[in-house]
Image 1 (cartoon, rainbow, N blue to C red):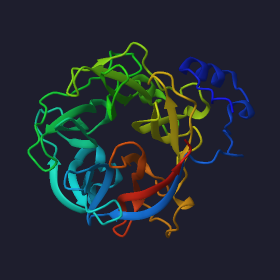
Image 2 (cartoon, rainbow, N blue to C red):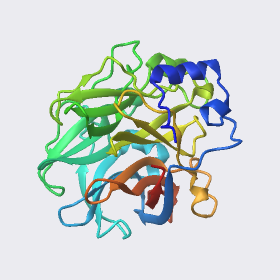
Image 3 (cartoon, helix red, strand yellow):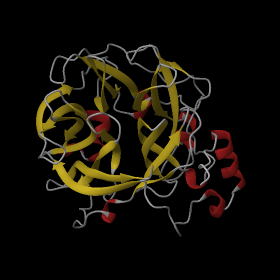
Image 4 (cartoon, rainbow, N blue to C red):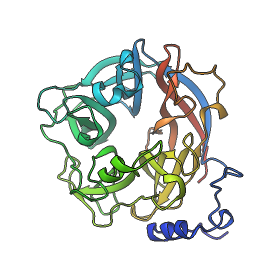
Length: 362
């Protein structure tokens, strides 16, 4: 069998601009036929919810105690779904296993107020360990709006210990007029083939965001910055953006990327924002972290896996899994569980949702 063709970014955009047919690309923009999802999933369920809170951004990690520690974001119910932008805090929960109910343990990072760069929100937690140090990447802002979103980094020697909090952001937006001049957010982290530490980040252009019409303004792309140490300093690569759907129809884009390495390839799972639809996940692969394959479906909408009553009117994003993150097996070689956030639950807010990954398309 021939090896699958991995498009370079330039080829991907050129084929998009030329409108090559779905038969050539192997996809359907009209929804007539879709490939089988990359992940075969078995629902475990809404294993973490909190009364009076929205829960989002579920980043799991195995602890030295054998438990699963979950770094998540939450905000008060009275703020509504938009409270993530002006009142989120990052907390830790834990469970004896991915199948068990999670229990809240502590607040890790809360908005600091005043003139701090993360004065009004702390969101997008991504927990990882390098050698004997834990690194908690996150996003903060200082005006309750998107244009001050910045990626930061807190560190600790233990999952439940004292976290050293940064006085300045880890990664800043680009110069005015650049593709990434609006913000830096949605951190994804991995050690690269070159021995450096790679930080993928989402951003978009301010002018497009302010002037475009339609339900989704701006076009979210992903860039890459590299450093010799996990704590930086990070330098953006000249090839940015490395993932760019801007020449696709209907302002297609992606967000919430999570990256891992398996069998000599880098893999990304992300939330679809119009490539297929707004309820699926996307899966992309790369040999070098720069040239990514055309997206395929990673997972389907929630109703494909579970049946739940209709959502109340205030939860308009019901039915999709967002902020997808992977818990690898304990030796770190294969993805075993898919964590995400989804609306509703018994408190009519949003909760964690966990799937067991029973097979992948490798």
